[in-house]
Image 1 (cartoon, helix red, strand yellow):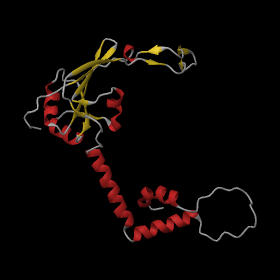
Image 2 (tube, helix red, strand yellow; image 1 turned 45 degrees about the vertical axis):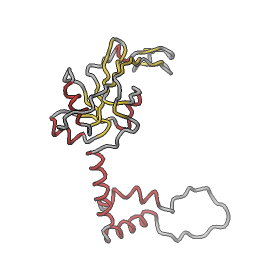
Image 3 (cartoon, rainbow, N blue to C red; image 1 turned 90 degrees about the horizontal axis):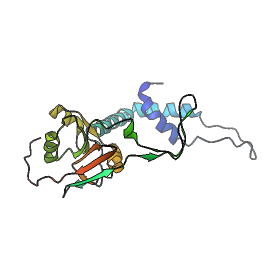
Length: 211
């Protein structure tokens, strides 16, 4: 089969009305006269290839993929901070099952409260920001230490990495901001003993718009 057909093969296969389960004989039998399923798929793909549909669909898929990589979907529900706040976050969890090692020996018992910071400390602060807000970008780059990880909730990470010569991450699906219950930006998460400190910062309303 032509490799150009592969991106559409699964879609066509799943959409085919010919798929059915065998429930045995349920009455009078009639001869099956329809084409073999794979032959139908092959025929359909060949027709799509001939009229250019495959190329058009592949180009659309490529364009959508590139657009999503360059600008991931923004995290919904976040606003610019109106006040500076500080709170502590306890990362400890209560185990819902025994934790065993590779030999089957129990390391931790169900019900044990475990703090991941005891074994894996947060070595670099996490800064959450809107990459389309120049004020937040300038504030983030002014923070110390410079090893903080910059995590976008909106914006174009690849463009910013090229312009700023600094690695940017993206909070895909808003999982991190939801985990830390961050509601406003910019925000910073760093370690304070066995707790995490979460700060949301209110920035001056008027800032230079250099990016």
